[in-house]
Length: 413
Image (cartoon, rainbow, N blue to C red; front, side):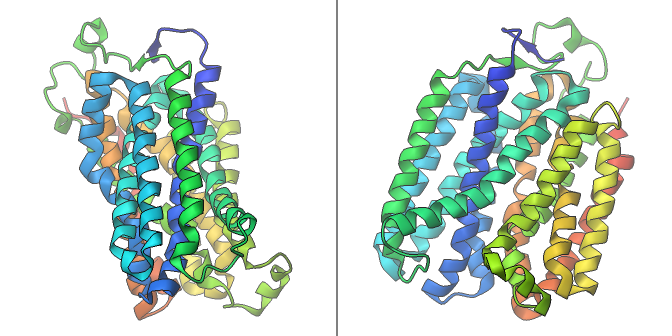
């Protein structure tokens, strides 16, 4: 069980939920920008999805610096620092928008800086929520965080659209300069979140055996280990998270690709095609709710991951074979993604002892999978079709299934 300076964690968990909402909000904005960029700058789908990809690349580059920062100033101040990066990112977005069509490169830079903030926030929030209580129920806590995170995706898009309407711009973005004021408003929101994080009652936490002076650190599986590379289950977990983040990002950001492929979509056009935004998020939240109810009372974390990865593989194959039903099958794929992060994080961090923070950095690097899959999907969708792009997902879910069955159990002597 994690060690903390306080006995009550309810308020701390609520604040961490706010952190996860902020992560989803930032990704939701970036996902929303992919479409307008295609229209405003006349670029292809692959370059449009590059904005989303650049939001994930910093996970690979800044995971280790984020971990070093946590060791230096602690979890809470590192979380607050992440919001500084977010604020700078949206200031750069505003600058890029003011430049019109000549600001495309700066848009990409803005997405990258926002990704740095996300890398720092993920490197703190995920291990924090994992070790603040018993490791066997960590997936339940991360499921709660996941609900906060995935609600933020559609909320971000709806909020941005509301701002545009409130400012008299309208729902259709016809030029980049229209987004300047909304970006500055969002920048102010992230500054406030950073201040709130600094004053929040967040106790510092350590994993079992993580303290250098802990007796547990000198015994058990971590005893005698000198490098994170001696923990094969953690390395495999990072790869599983890399793959999972890629397929999750696709499921949450590609629904619009399937609009109009089936006449039966008329049944949901009453509320507008924007309703499709909610389909994948609803699938993931349904999985999270079941995780909260079932783990660990009715099923273990690894069992939940086995079930969901199997469902995800079936949903991916369904999209490939029956693209007309893709909006509903995306819900199935997203449900299959739901237990990815909640189960992979604790299964990978288990028994790391004093290497927990380093293992967290390794897992955070795995989130860079979101930088790889959207552009690849864009290439396949442009060259062939959206359903062909979902061939990327099938082998990924099968690997996650392997990790759930056997990969997380691999240990060295």
